Image (cartoon, rainbow, N blue to C red; front, top):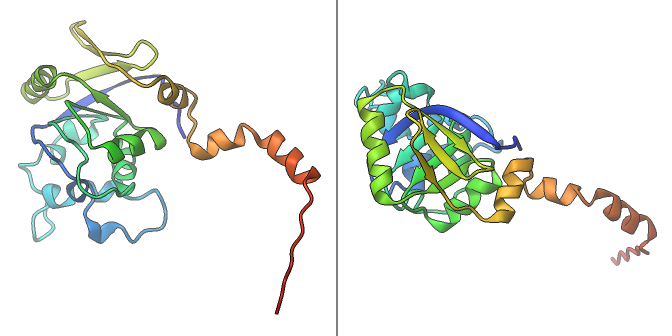
Length: 202
């Protein structure tokens, strides 16, 4: 997993509440067995019309928002089903951070496990960031995870809280597998010393 230390990127605003995981990655695209390749289907029903032509009214269909790596949205982001494909799709599209007033719990946890930083800010601050990034396409934010700050280009900053354990995992780029492999020597030592017996009966 790629570490998250400091990130600067273009902001894409989606001024909607209760964006669910089926909107993020529709169910018909969940048949892939890899974690990659889901970005092309991100917000598919919003990005494309019924005839599969691009919907120019959706923010991510337009430059420079199509190059955004920071998403700002309304409360209860990631609600609905628990599919881990949602953060996979966001990350594969290019998003490293999501800023919202609140998140659905399972989606929130899945983001950390996949290298996406979900940031909770007061609703008034999120509303202002949505307004500014809508009026100023290409607006950029810098996210400093060590200092736990979101910084605008004019220097205004917003502090955010993050669990210390999750912060450490992101800073060091450790997912569940990476955390386990930190104990590889101890695991190998145990496997070499522990008695194993296999009994096969007809």
